Length: 126
Image (tube, rainbow, N blue to C red; front, side, top):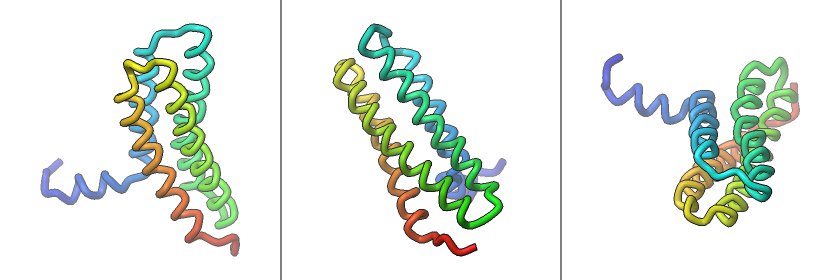
């Protein structure tokens, strides 16, 4: 693979890869957290919502109609917003890991904005 700059910029906008990397980074972060009565449920919520973003984007990418596509994008938008919420709660529960949670929160926020724009610019017409 050459490093001509095109690969890097294309990869930056490859949502399939970007959402998968986000899920992987989130899992890695969560595996490093202490598990107790507070963090355990929060960790499970983040795993579900953060990994759901990429799974639903994969479904959107293979949608059979514009309506299906729009529905899956809507789910991506909601899951990324939910992930932001749970990451915020984890940052409160484990304050020493707040900087790492904040980095993931920022990526979830960017994904949320991207999916909101896609959703806004799509329509229900088949």
